[in-house]
Amino acid sequence: MVTTLAVLAAAHIVPGISYSGWGSLLGASLLLGIINAFVRPVLLLLSLPWIILTMGLFILVINALMMMLVSFLIPPFQVDGFWSAFFGAIIVSIVCWIFSSFFRASDGRIYSITHHESIKPANARLVK
Image 1 (tube, helix red, strand yellow):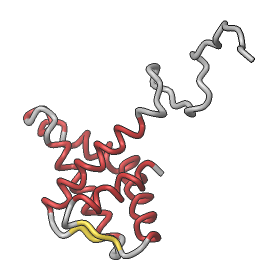
Image 2: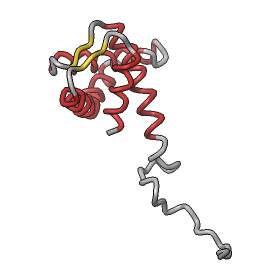
Image 3: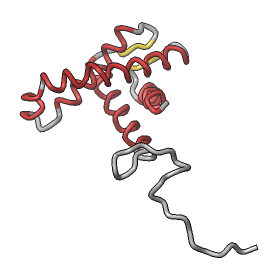
């Protein structure tokens, strides 16, 4: 769901990204999540010298390539070129980072917003 909102934001902000319907948007965000989980770590490992040389900026290029791959595999989701994918990947990264900060605790675990074990109950009187 977070990735879907991030791709939706990128499609509305970046002029070169478009989708034909909610199905293509959901499919693109699902495929982007799957590719980011399985393909991206391999590419990050293979391009480690470039990432070190550019002080991490090459990760943005990898993210843009992942978005272009999703566009290639799902034709109703279109990314016009590399720069549209580049800026779209930046928007997706920022939006995912913002939304995931609501669900991720300081220990790295993901909790729901309504229940967190480290929140102490209040020791206060109830005023009626």
